Length: 398
Ligand code: GLA
Image 1: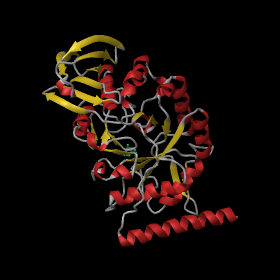
Image 2: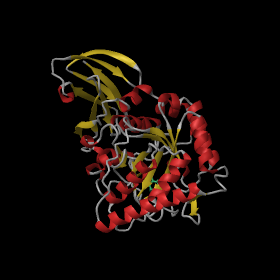
Image 3: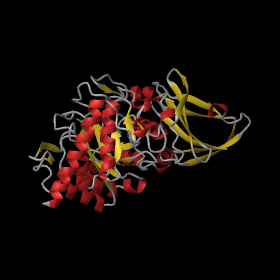
Image 4: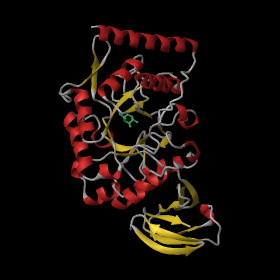
């Protein structure tokens, strides 16, 4: 009873503090500084494949598959339930999970995920409702953060639907402070779709922020309110200076394995996400994953580029029509390079050492990260034939 009173008192005090700041129109000011996500988060999220069809069995199955497929060993860590797990609030305002779909409750599910050596994530929204129309956290930020911490949540994806005229920096700072006050380190994933340019203000607010609207599982299609893979790639060019350890640009979750692109295109998608230091959140059905998809998602040499501890996001160094060169500086001074062919014919693409910031006369070793093979030493440049819609991804080491 005393514990319940203490909890209610804590929630009321926090809520009062938020109201005072709202009246003064002052954004909450504690820096996030939660010391986590020093490399881009890796994991799996339910949304891209399963949408609202989430359940305890689905999440447990995903956790099991991450372990048995070798994805855990390759670095995937967070298992995140996206929208639709919540159905109501109880008389005290606590968020309530769907008892039919999560009969054992969220705490038991988090315990299960933890027992597999993984971390557990959940989803909410800064507005009154989530994007799928479930209850959001507006006005319940501190209460929800305390609840998440009590359940053992390690990652919160926080969406931006039904927020009216709310100020994004203010709303996300409020949840950041609530998470901090909960006392549990929780990766904070800002899902504001880039509308208020979070790269300009979110470094001290979240660990990652969406830079675009929702990804679609297609190479270059035009779907309402969704973006194809290549359109998203274009929007990332120029954002590289804003990313770094603990704070990442998020071009949305992976579609690899969801069926809308060819294996070659999925390899390009994964390679670009690795080079962009993007969070690697798989979004496919892990239980029925073909060998070639598993091979893409678990390519340790590509993942090492993504997880490089220097934490530099790669950038586009050249675009000539449908042929592009992207490069990322790595901690040991080497460069990861992608020769990217967006055209319909196989094409020769080259990169010069000068474009990578090396002297022209240098001789450098080149390793192909998909063939997993050293190709030898090259003077001044490297070039290769790149298949239509494909990449050649290499590491260049002077
Ligand atoms: C928004 C987000 C998606 C997903 C859905 C859930 O569209 O951008 O990633 O979380 O909401 O409703």
